[in-house]
Image (cartoon, rainbow, N blue to C red; front, side, top):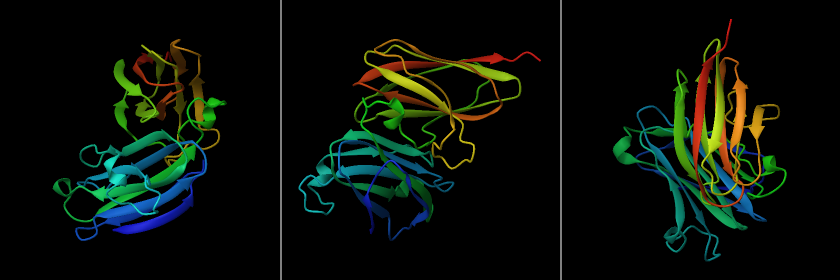
Length: 252
């Protein structure tokens, strides 16, 4: 097991690219701390083709500075199959944390390479809303090219503050996006990752909807060809949701 101490994690993403796990060294652990309550965001991407890696988040519950069996009693895991991106978005109190990236042997043929990004944004419920939004862009839910209407259901809460959908539009195609079915407040925003670094940089949020309470959210008329991300983010508490992508043709 390799251990990397990242110090204090803040809103500026820490990026660790081109790391490797092997059959003899199957786990990397990244230790960091937060000095106040935060949303911790972890994004595991670019897992090598034909391989599988997972990510877990633990807190140093017994305050001894090491990841031990006591800490492992409670943790959060993202363990999708194959080389699909993994993500954790967790609202928590201050402390020392361990992000553990592990090779999933049954789904891997040899060495597993990956990229990891970590950030700690303000806790959900903070104004401005952008301060608590995740600034990482894993492809959690891949919709691909929108050739028709698509509806998905999901849930955001303190242990999963953000869901991220990736989609693309072709020439003379557009989409309206509606979030509804809320029981507490949640918001949406659309990002175009112009430099493809899988981080939300300045100027890349092209639209957002932040109505209060359980009012539906709507982003209309995204109509430029390209690749996009939609983030669904909790503002206050646990809520199920329905998100609909209404695809349309743009007249010549």
